[in-house]
Image (tube, rainbow, N blue to C red):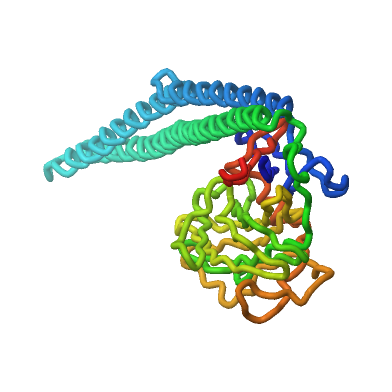
Length: 433
C-alpha cells in the first residue's frame, strides 16, 4: 500500500511543437469527491504515452540527421552560396589587380611626361599629357570597378556565412531536441514500468490503496505554507525560507511527509531551466539535503493534532541562470499506523521572478499563494511555543500568466498526444510498501 502523488506537467516534443498546459494537483484514491479528483493514468494511457514518446524520439533523430546533412552540404565547395562567394571573390581579386595595373600606368605616363627634354616640341608635350589623362581616367574606372567587386564579394561571403550559421543553429536545436526526446522517452518507459510493477504489487491498476485500512483521502486541514520566500530571487544567490506543515485536524498524524517541487523557465516560458535551480531542506537533526527526485522529505513523526512543524528550506539559483519565472509547489501526505492515509488536496504554488545575476531588485515582498483559513484555528505548536494558525487550507494553484509559462516545460514530464504525461511519484516508506 502506497501513497501516490501525480505531477501533471507539459513539455514540447521538439522546438516547434505546440505545448499543452495541464493543472498540477495530487491524485488520491478513487473515492475522492468528483470535484477534487484527478484520475491516475491507466497502464493503457502510459503505454500510449510511451509509444508517443518513442515516435517523438524517432522523429527527433530523423530531424537531427536532416539538419546535420544540411550543414554538411552548406560547408561543401559545391554549395551554391559557396560557389557564388568563390566566384565573387575571384572577380574582386581580378578587379583589384586591374586597379593596381591602372594605377601603375598613371605613374608610368607621368614619368614619361616629366622626362621630356626642354627641347621637346609642343606636339610631344601634348601627346605625353594626353597619355597621363587617359591613364588617370582608366585608373578611376578601375578603382570604381574594384570597389564594386569587393562589395559584391563581401555580400556573397556574408550570405554564405549567414546560411551556415543558421544551419548550425538549427543543428544545435535539433541535437537538444533529440536529447530531450530521449529523456522523455526514458521517463515514459520508466513510468510505464513502475505502473506495471505497482499493479503487480497491489493486485490491480484501479488506484485502490490496498485491502487493509481505508483508501487515501484528501485532508484540507493538513496544510503546507511557505514563509519568507521572496517574490524576486537573483541568479547566483541562495535564499532561505521556511516550509510550515500544520496538522489542523483533531487527530495525531503518525507520519507526515512534506512535499516540495521547484520549476523555472526563462522569460519566454519556453525554455526549461530546472537544472539551474536547486531546492534543499534541513531539519534540526540533519544537514542540508537536496530534495530528491520524488520531491519528498523525511517524515515528521508524529505530528499531533493542532501542531505544526517548520522545515528549513533554501533555494539556490546558479549565476548563469537567465532572467525568468519560477514557482515552488508544496504539499504534504500522511500515513497512520492503522493504515489511514491522505494529504493536502492540491499543490500550493508560490511564484517568484528570477532576476539576472548581479541585479539589485531592492526590498521585495514575499511570494504569496491564495489560501483561506481552516474552520478550526487555535493551533498548538509541536513541542511547545506560541499557538497560531498556519495559514489555512490549500487552494489550487490557479492559472496566472507566470504559472502558465512555467507549466510549459518540466524535466519530470513527457508528451501524451500533443504534449503531456502523468509521472507517478510514490512515497519512500519501506515499512509501508
